[in-house]
Length: 322
Length: 303
Image (tube, rainbow over all chains, first blue to last red; front, side, top):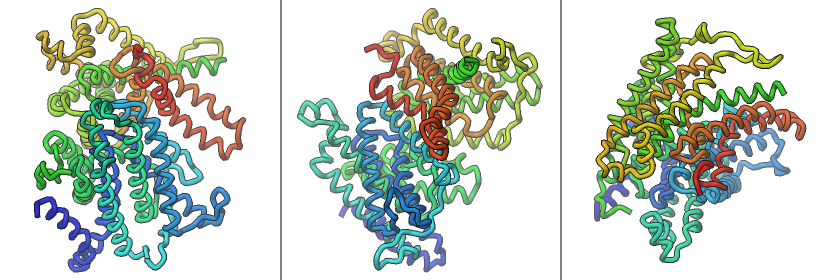
């Protein structure tokens, strides 16, 4: 048993036991906080897939977070007022709506990724940022769906036999999805596909010479990442019962990147810790002062300057890194 | 016709603002290979310093000095403490560290100047309008803005093409290691270029303070547009920054003027109004995506 396994088991135990702990110390708020941890962790793990393993610095990933959320919001809006959308009367069934939202995000990721991957380096960062900003301004312009003010959602989507309105049940669903997504991503980066992706990151020229066609691998990774981030957006919309253009703002993209770096770039478990630490720190600081960015900003700088392998790297030795 | 000329002037004014910001940004990127998100914060710092100084002294000249000095000094501190350590890091690190600085600066400026900044009047010498054409008068302050943009463009060209420092800047943009190996103090050159960029931002801040709203976060949106400008023009080239500024400035001005009426002819108003406003806001990004698709290295890049 090495430290990495212990840390992962410990993390899993914390996530599983939190509702009991919250009840024990009479802080039901903890469940909400950890729901946010789990949702953002899904987004951060997805981003790590391309950031840490594919060396694709996407500065517009919040677009997929927002898109996933808006699919839930918009379909909910038309279902609630009975108007239907594009001739379909809409649904509140998570089993239909969520895969649909994820598929839409995957298609958006495929298109944006295909266009963006024509560039590399700083141009790639900027074109993904540009696509993110396009989403943002389109959402701001959609006055019908609330524009700048966002869109409130009437009720959570429903799953047969499971009551998602119960915060603890919803929390466990998010944790289960996070767990499944982490395992999936572990399988992806360990597979032949993941190896190809990582070899392209380490030495693109050699990999191409060895016969890898870069676009295929990078584009698939980008699409999977977009779908995962979209899932996080879907969960967030159902958690907060509210979506707004802020979900796609460039600061949000920056926050997602910060979570990945904070937890540890290129380690699938790291971003889970990173997302939790980031949201947790935000929670603590906002409770302490309204000028919490005064602390958070320098923390980000220090993480970048000194914390090369993130929080995960502090505990897990380099040879055990994924 | 009058509307066309007026929109062209508005576009020129926006181009001048964009050029003041993107010239420094592109130099810092071209020479030091650093993506500096803090650049927009220098603009904000300059505008706040200018507004505070103008409120205290009532003089526009004092405001200019305060803005340039404030932004320049803050730029030097940022370079010294943080950016210097990022020169050899990858872009991801640079983006994140400077994003942290942006968040920090926003709060710092809030603490120092308060949430509602002093309103800045147009200086008496530049108030009023000039009759440019029969039926077209244009505010003097905006003309001064355009003129200062042109002056800075010429000054930068002289500096870069005709002086020894400029020669080093060009050499640095071409091949950093070689300049270093030839015995040039690269650290000092980096500091100088970074400070120059910050000073230009401060100047842009004081010029736009009487025209635009001075507020927290004013630097961020314009910064992203400035990035669009340098990517469209070709990263690292001041000429590219100039071309990009003109393209984006004009596209914005004419988009604002003509997109709504064009769309309203094609579709019903409940569809065209929101679509029009989204299109105008997103036009710069759409342009950039198009340019990158066809000329990934920017318009000014040599093949």
